[in-house]
Length: 394
Image (cartoon, rainbow, N blue to C red; front, side, top):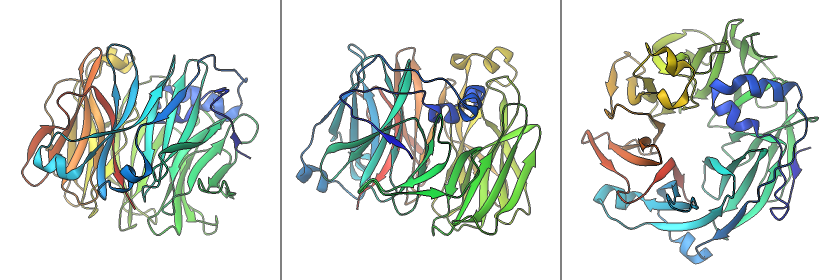
């Protein structure tokens, strides 16, 4: 079963979740799937809650959460900004958790669908950990090691995969720790649960160079149906549309070239009508984001595909945010920064898309695109922010 550990010890193992997110490092993830040696992290990670439960309960229903990094000391803080302040250009914001990372860094922020919990991923030189923050109490309540964080279910259960010895996929209730096995193969590297919680789509591979398979089944594993198989490619981020009729994914070549350009596709949930939508960045872990009405998808497009050096060096990426209309394939360019830009996330009302862009070698910016006014604005002009996500509070 998944292992918990105390933040006091802060011992961690290899964290393959970020390796999944960064498809360019997929070879390392495959190594983790097959089995890898245990290593102990030397860095310590401590957290400090900065708000009281009362302050947390006053947060608006949907808000922006992002990671702010102190350029001087390297300290990191989770920041929350209401959608109202984003709409009006207000400067109000709330710091609600300070993270003393030491030699580690936050690799991902993953709010639960109904907002009670946030999974925070730490990437360390010698491994990684996943911490669970409880919004109502303003506390970090649990930690997990030797697992891959795959996502959340619509009922706020975590989807995590065991590590070295235990390679099963589990559903874990963060409130009481109750866990159950999700009936998918041990070679599964990605899972997405449909909005009604009745079906799942999952992708599997037995190793680099063997391609991948993607399946749809009932949540209990029954009625499994293969919707995609290729010995030469990997399917990344297969994600249900809001109406559960389609699945979008990014397909990349299954090679040892880390940052090759991928392709954005949609396919009906029964495996019919696969439709190519656009070239897309596939090697840097930027996920696609459905609009709430299921008509459009925000994604990251690579601007320098002819730069062969960018196939191997992360910092040479030049990318922008795009929107594609699923029904007719019409593409709209959202950003125009001519630098590394990614992490698009659509607000639940469909009005905003948030994303990050690399300002310079040491800092990032978070921008907000208003789909109604076709305008771009900085989310926080004074912040060195990254990893933007939308939080829906209960």
